Length: 265
Ligand SMILES: [Zn+2]
Image 1 (tube, rainbow, N blue to C red):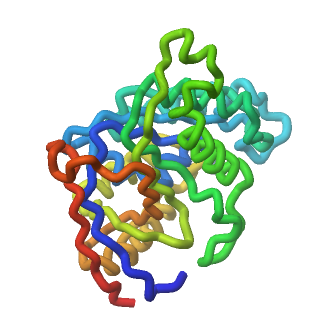
Image 2: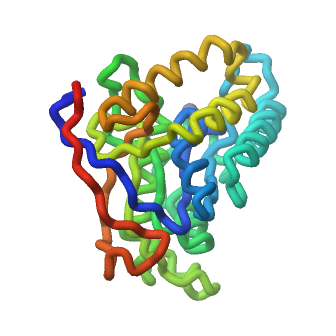
């Protein structure tokens, strides 16, 4: 990671936001502490899982439908801990997620129904993490599908015209917050909600068998990101502004100021 990037301290809070991910547990490894903070401050949030994680086991004899049911119930509990208003499972196949028109239509339907100001998804440009490792193809696919659904499809009345005809009016999502990014532009101080993220991760026992080994790593990553803006813990995002605020500060939930801070490292 190029640590000479200027990271802004994010103070813009969406009144409504949607987290779109590939698998149950992605949202909790991802922006859970930011989601919890914004929800605590009054935002309404909705979680969308494109798959139900039906390939997320080491034993090929595992029944994929049973596994999907287990993982959906784990994700429902984690979402309750974070405070989401609700969750949608799109039941696409784990390991075979495709950014096709069928998925895009499902996502446009979700976006036009919940009408979020911001969508949080994986940065689809992250194929390799700078710290090492490959980003799962489903993660990249869900990220790109979310971007494509936000812009232009959700705001275009002529995209999937039967949706508008059925009453789902076009909707403008104003910002994207891309997580698991190699090019972060903004950081959210999550000192107050990092423990909730760890609690949400503990709600996924089928995936995380030894949470006591995971937690120090999650805390260390949050501490490293926090150091860059001078706080104890942070989550970082590549923020894409699609529509500027019409009147910055006019909406109580939208403080548009962002104070650039030179990172320490
Ligand atoms: Zn995943």
